[in-house]
Amino acid sequence: MKPICLTIAGADPTSGAGIQADIRTFDRCGVHPFSVITAITYQTATEFFGYKSLSNELHKQLDIILTTYPIKYVKIGMIPDFKALDIIVEYIKKYSLNVVLDPISISSAGKRLSSEGLELEIEKHLFPCVKIITPNISEAEFYSNMNLFNTTPEILREASENLLEKLFVERNSYNIEKAVVIKSAARSQNKIFDLVLINKKVGEGTNKEFKVYSKNKTPFEGNVHGTGCVFSSAITAFLAKNYSIENAITKAEEFFVSKFHKFIELPDKGKIIDLTVSNEQLKVINQIKEVYNFISHSKSFSNLIPEVRMNISCSLLNANKREEIAGIEGRITIIDDYPHASGEIKFGISDHTARLILSAKKFEHSINLVMNLKYIPELIKSIQEKTDLEVTEIVREEQPKEIKSKEYSTMDWLIKESIEKKGRIPDIIWDKGSVGKEPMIRLFSRNSKDMIAKLKQIINLSVIEHD
Image 1: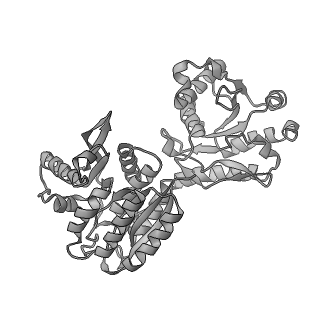
Image 2 (image 1 turned 180 degrees about the vertical axis):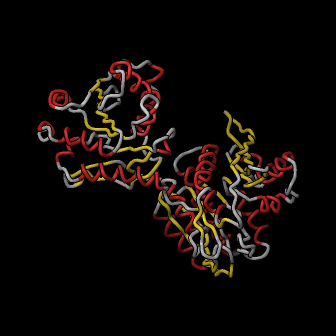
Image 3 (image 1 turned 135 degrees about the horizontal axis):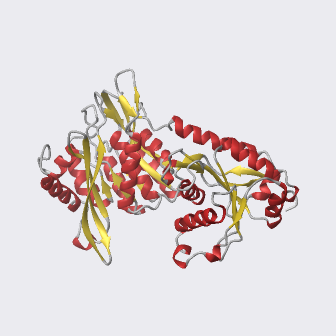
């Protein structure tokens, strides 16, 4: 099942912050968003006019969602009052939820988002129930009761340790992994630094580990609305995708950096992070769409979908990591005898075909598209005899033992073996499989036009109709 997670936060009319920003971020990170609204806010990207608490409706919202769906990961943002806090704590404990808390009480416009004095109750009752807190420097200063502006690294570390202690109730609970992320903890002339402290599992016990993440300053005037919401939501999304706390924070930092260079400029001089795809990404998505549209209208092509299902992966021109390669979420299956995509086209969701592209690009940079097809012995023979496609067989049993256990190493090995045999990457690399590995045909190309031309040759072979 596709990863899912829940946001509990206030609604923002601009969609730049609050629950709308969380939903947009969850979607971009590849998880399905569920949402529970704590308050309706009246604001623009630059001004805050007030809010209406929905704490009287909160119990019903949470009860319906959490009794129906197996949600384990939750991001919490705006908590408007004491009643909302009590209900949220009740449900966290009842369902053993893994929580990322963005402890926001003041809007980016400088106005309160909660009842006076609620912060102390949040610290007392909610902090011990969460996995990660993501305060900005002002929030960290308040909760640590320390002066943190223009201070030393040593004092910032002391503050993060102070905050981490507040996430634990008893000493015997210290074996649980938890973390504090102080956003924009320090600045230099050209950089902004986030300070992370993780109570990290090591063997039978835990150690405290500090990490510092830096990002380039982006020159602009004014404030960017909703940055904290996007960052904490990204951490939650990656936790839901089974990343460790450390890796989820790292992935969220990378995601944030990749987005924090492009803003939507609003008429009131407000700015929100643009989470839409870039023109380069859109070109990649459209190439996958072209190939998919070609095969989805062919009943015959259903015979080429393997048991593990099929994917079409396409990369950005200079891709060097999986997040720069798009694929079809859930892959391609068969519905009513036709190939059918199980989900949307997104970046960072394909694995096998994405790793093939990354391995291939080390040797031939022009390779940007890969598809996996069902292995049919007669088809391989027919391709060799009746098309001009270059075909290479790889024998998986010849893999060294240390490579067999690592799928990424296997992809590298597969490509290297083809290079050694042909001196280049052929159109098709195929194998007869091995224990636990389905036989497979892999089709490589430079772009969608090239891929469709190759598929036309394959789909016209009569052997496909008779499989």
